[in-house]
Length: 225
Ligand SMILES: [Mg+2]
Image 1 (tube, rainbow, N blue to C red):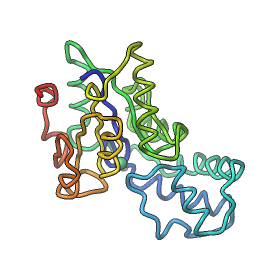
Image 2 (tube, rainbow, N blue to C red):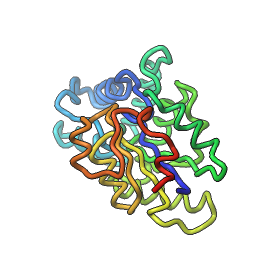
Image 3 (cartoon, helix red, strand yellow):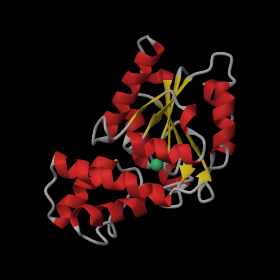
Image 4 (spheres, rainbow, N blue to C red):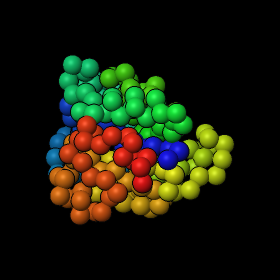
């Protein structure tokens, strides 16, 4: 195991719904359309695909300039909702990050998230976690989560300065989409039921490990197979 890639929302932290609230408010601020996010399911999605869906349902042109306008508002508005007193890391997250960093041949730790990079930074910085990650795949890399996974693997390879086999990577996430994107890059997958899916739903995707929260898995068990 040379690389571990973590999803953010529902896996590392809960932000108390900050991202979802800011998304709705940003659509209103940018295009004057209220309540646009009410019927949208966010978990496991990427920011750019969510924006595309909002544009489709609300007849807004999905253009680069509209996307830039929207995410400018989003980043401004999310700061109003991010609060270190609300939400925070899920059980076992800090211990797993510490245990991974303390291994004799510690793996590189990165992000594999549907957040845009600046949104990811603000969410994780709220809880003092941003500096734990050396690189990441973000929504800026692609709209499709599988291709974000491919981008994250490529960045991991560049960071380590060597070729990387999929089997040397572990992808940690809270939804079937996380498991799917891990399989797409032939990584091992660890599904954790702290976010967007139940343990049964995750087990049905046949990840290498499925746990209620990260306290239920020791890093040695990941190394042991
Ligand atoms: Mg997630």
